[in-house]
Amino acid sequence: MKLAIIDVGCGNIGSVGIAFERFGLQPVVTDDATEIISADRVVLPGVGAAGFAMEQIILRGLDEPLKQLKQPVLGICVGMQLLFEDSEEEDVACLGIVAGTVRKLSAEPGMPVPHMGWSRLSVRDESLGLHDGDYVYFAHSYACDDGPHSAATADYGRPIPAAIRQDNFSGVQFHPERSGEAGARFLQKFLGQ
Image (cartoon, rainbow, N blue to C red; front, side, top):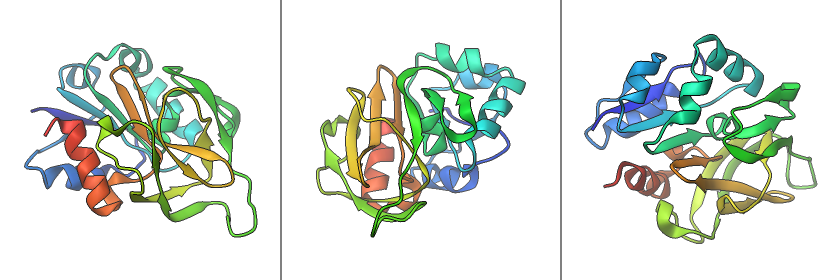
């Protein structure tokens, strides 16, 4: 299986690649549209700011090819946020694959921003390999709106989509590469294992 991890000059490419190597794969890290289109699975990783990541996607000419992908695509953290229409972070237009806006989290007593740490999932759709009650690791200050695309949520002052699915596109706000058994189970399901 050919797994392409999209290189947009930022993000958690190394740790995501290592997570997939544990399943016997050698991911291809690339910003070449032809390589990405020919992959069996595509991962859009993310750590950092939505504005910079979108700028890099557009500079590399990947915005339109990404929207046209038919194989399974996984966005991780900021990579998931980029699948939405827009983000309040740097007021940026995103890929527009999934309807909704990414909004800044509101700090509340016992819930500082950024949201960093383990949170429990409420799972609506177990087809992604997640189970109700799983604990997964988050590190973010912005979150997508809850909606019909949400497969799992975490409560952080409001329901935060922890996992989404729309057609061949899925995404997670948490970091599966740092989420122990639940994260590994999720990644295996994405690979069809």
